[in-house]
Image 1 (cartoon, rainbow, N blue to C red):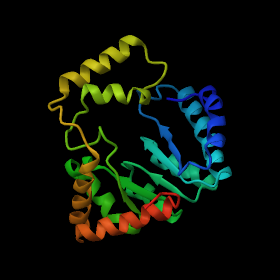
Image 2 (image 1 turned 30 degrees about the vertical axis):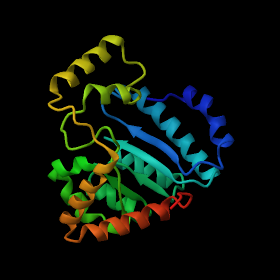
Image 3 (image 1 turned 90 degrees about the horizontal axis):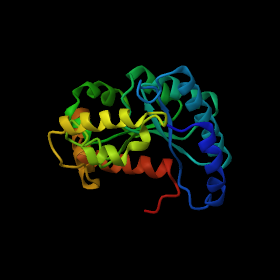
Image 4 (image 1 turned 180 degrees about the vertical axis):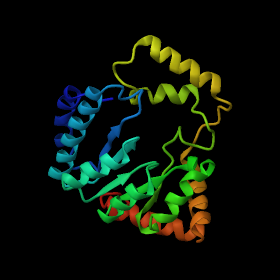
Length: 225
């Protein structure tokens, strides 16, 4: 995960490329034990997150947000810092936290992985369709339960930068052992979460496709149609 020094190095790029930027992200908080084992790790993440939110406000851009094991505090922090446009991607927090985000005008996106996790049905039912977007987050978060070794390597940056080579080796072995399939998630699989959300909400896939696309263009007005 990022530390404040990492952000200072990257900050000039935000302003250099401001005319080309559609959003600031992926930013956010990940308080899982392997990403934030100590309070200092969580404090560092919060420091970076708040600075990124300030950049988004200064550049008048929405934020694309990661909120793993930190849904409530992530939404609370964004509200406290005046963020009005946000997408909480692969959201898996409690419905009560999501509804606070809905009140703030935030959107929530879901990948194909929701098709194998009925625990999120209640969440999807409670979030209005006007606050839902579709995503894949490929190559991870597909129909396969376990991320392949190749996906692990491509997402290595999600692990705490303080992780030792031995820890990374153990993580690699873990995912290699439990990867029952090497079928990777692809952008085309977005139709899977579209159909699933339609089924959960009792509407047609065409309705989900149309409304979610409208939501995305409303949140990211600089997107080219």
